[in-house]
Length: 249
Image 1 (cartoon, rainbow, N blue to C red):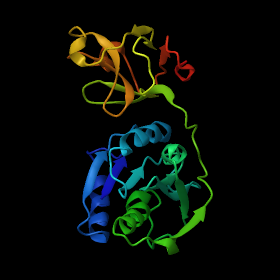
Image 2: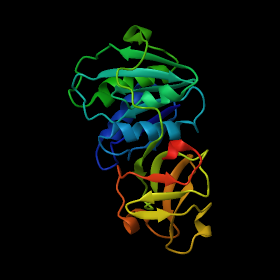
Image 3: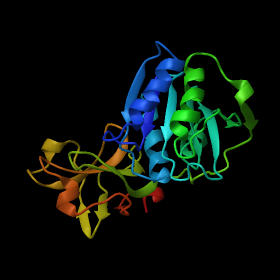
Image 4: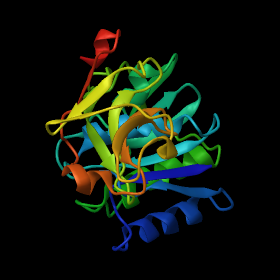
């Protein structure tokens, strides 16, 4: 199984070009579009989202991961195995959260370079062939060099910022919800929001926070666009107050 996680969007030809390479190099392997709306150029937000979303996929899944504003520059290219799932992408921090939070992780640097490597489309020319080989059970060890760790590693702690806004206007934060106290309030953009378990527990148009299906604390509104209602954007800081767990402060 090949799982695609990128900031490519759907308006441009990039996703289709990558899929063409994957289909040719790994025929018959299912390709799943997980997300092509990761925040543009934001590897830190992408790293948190990737970790949250990867857990729903089976061991052995191969993730093609591209949020790569430094493409063609000095950043390295990497492969990570984290608890049996594989991640291929730039060594710019994007893969670092899944590696840091795994019980068992291994890392490789991709030293192979294909003929005709584009300066600005390593997703198609470099990462896709490597991901396809792994997914086809043809591990390209002659293309890789084992390394002790990734070059760029983000702090693996929760990130108290908005990571992603979906088309409903729900704003995902980088705070995991497993230990959050429902009695806590979430502060954002000068507003203080109470917890609601589900949308229908809130009044129509009321903004609130809850733990979403990816396990992250999310700002939402009942039958309304919370991001528009509160003027939210990716990168806005949030604060969960009144929780007994100091990680949220």
